[in-house]
Image (cartoon, rainbow, N blue to C red; front, side):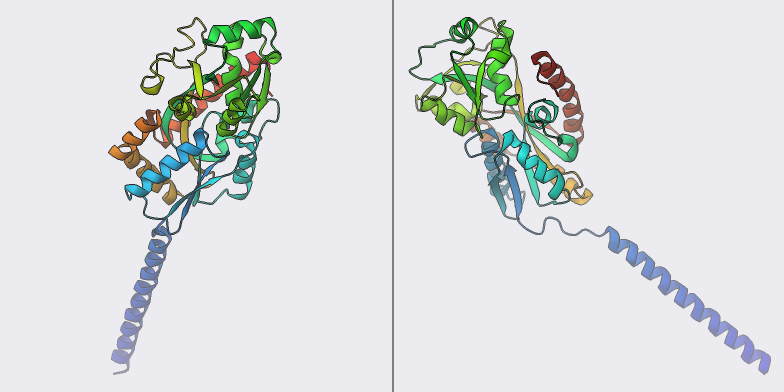
Length: 343
């Protein structure tokens, strides 16, 4: 009897141990699943930053991006655009790379300045695309050399001849700091024409909108900017575009504008625009935006918006975009070195 009771007790104890073990194992599995479980990102409003004033290429890109994402319901959370001007994007980058490093709910748009500002000597930024998570390239644009509609200059060479005689006579302006994108666009034709680019008088403004205002107000003779940002001013008859930095004519509102190359000046410059997240963006958020941005570029609404803005489609996913940025970093370094502006 005793031995049977003992065996029975041992059996019960064994069953209890197995049960507890099973429960423990189940809890661990549940715990594991819990760690991997989606947070449901995004759960609140998303801010898309244009690191410049209103009216420039970054601002237009951010507003077009958020508008189409909302209209198509690709993103159902509210989307807002914030303008954070300063230093051709460098002021915002300093904040983003140090204070928003894990903020999945704040994205921003940028273009070559994120590379240029990090490489140039004057007022360079210690932060660049490596302090972000590149999500996608969306479009490409080109530089434009622009004067007022009533300017005495009617072609690119007439401007360059004047600059060659006296580089300080004309004031060039742009929406970014010296050594940044608008500056490079402004002086590149002169450099290719044999003018010392360091002698060209350049005044910087915060954003293409302010640079155009300076031009129309008589505070600048010529501006170098992105072609898409002057489209409305061409339609209104306020400006004349002397040249674009594409390899072929752009078409549309720019169909009558010759390229710099057509005019015998080998000045070519492509302006990409892309979307970035924080350096320590969660894998869930990154996958969400990769998927959402791919849906965006394939939507008819986005294709129509790109056409309306006078941009050109040029989509690269996160991986391809990152590789491209590495390649362009090398190219920009070479250009800045030739101009004596590398850090």
